[in-house]
Structure formats: C-alpha cells, structure tokens
Length: 200
Length: 102
Image (cartoon, rainbow over all chains, first blue to last red; front, side):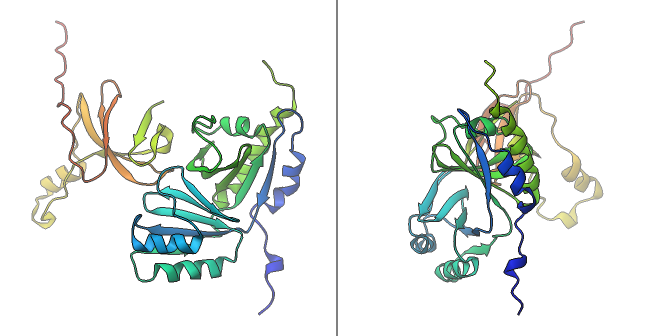
C-alpha cells in the first residue's frame, strides 16, 4: 500500500500562518496553535462498574466521575462528557489505543470508538487567553470557578466545543473538525484587540 | 437570559439547552386501538398552563442528557429540576387566570 501519511492535512493546515501572525505580545500576550492528529477515543461505560475500573487501569488512573473533572497520565488525558461518556485524548497511535481499550471493556455494556477525526485540538495560551474566551463563552472562567484540570463541553460563539484548561494560562479547545475553521478565525479576530493598550 | 440547572452539569446558560415540550406525556399503551381523534390528541394537544409547568429540556451542547424541569410560566422561575423517570415534584398546579376588570 502506498504511504499516505504524507498526504494527510490537518483541518487547520491552511490557517497555520494566520494563527502565527495573530500572536499577541505584551501584558496581555496570547497565541493560538493547532495540535493536530491527536488520538481521540470515545468511551461509553457505566461509572462504578468493573469495566470502568479495567478501562481506568489501561489509561493509568481512575476515570473522572463528574462534570468538569479530568484525569491525566503523561501525555494522555480523559475528560468527562456525560454521566456515562468520556473522551480520551492522547499522543498515541489511535488504533492500538482503541484496541487496548476495547479489550479491557470486553463484552461488558459500553462502547470504545476511535473518534480521532471528529475533533481537532487548538491550544490557546498566554495571560490574555481568558479574556479572549470570555468574549464568547458562557461558562464562568474566573479562577474561583474554573482552573487547570477542568474541562467542560460548552459553546464558543455559536460553536459547541470541549474547553479544557490544562495550565493556569493555557486552554485546549476541541471543536468538531467542520467547525475548526470558524473557531480559528473567530479566535484570531478576538485576539487582535489584545495587542492594543487596554481601554479603561 | 435564563440559567438552567442541569442535574448532571449544574447551572448553565439557556443557550446550551433545547426545549422538549411538556413532560410526563405517556405514550399510549395500545396505539393501534386509538381513534384518529385520540391519536391526534396524544400527538398534538398540550396543556397551556398558567403557573408551574413540568417540561422537558435537553442539555444539547453539554452532557446531551434529557431532564425535566418545573417552570413557572408567569415568571420563568425554574422551581425544580429532576432526572427523567423521577416523579414530578408537588409544586402546585395551574393558577386560574385573573378575571379581567369590567
């Protein structure tokens, strides 16, 4: 079979230059990059069951059990999406990760599906990142309510996405691939203002 | 803007939800036995309550789960939120419309 990986294009490959050019420096510095081709696996499993425990063992920690909660183990992260639904995001080979999780689930009730092409990952970082998101996200992002290790599914502007804070000033945004172009342009537009002095 | 408390995700903006109409409308046990009129009544006829009203909501961009809420249709105040399958909390019935002044 012909080698096809060289032909692979990320959903935002056409905007990489635009995103780099939009980087803002100064007090309210912020930049956005795409982290393409991460492995993503959708897990459906009843919490608290033996199957959930087995999946947790494969992933390297107890599965998150409530809204906003996440689990990280090395470059792998698991976010809570719903009462019996989780998303694994990892720098790994999606096929072998899915196979390992499928084996752990066995014949128990649940599902393990490779959804790597469903969403792409944008990383928004810098002291101004929260101001950018607050222009269009209805969730309270103030540190008293949100912080590193919190992930929620919400909207940015009109686009539904998974918002995951990974560090004090770094957010991961996971919009569906078909919305990624819009989200990237929305962010570039929202970041522009932070390059100018703040209007009191 | 209305804040709705999803039983799984907590308080979220109304824009994250979709409305699902009146709650507790039971599917007929033997739909084939219904007359056209009874079937139409099940499909299309809903209460137009003044006061506490039990309705279904879906947290469509969040956890994607359905739940029920009792909302006062006069004030938009959400009086209770509960999971599907749970009984409707007793929070009073419809309030009669005031009689117009003569």
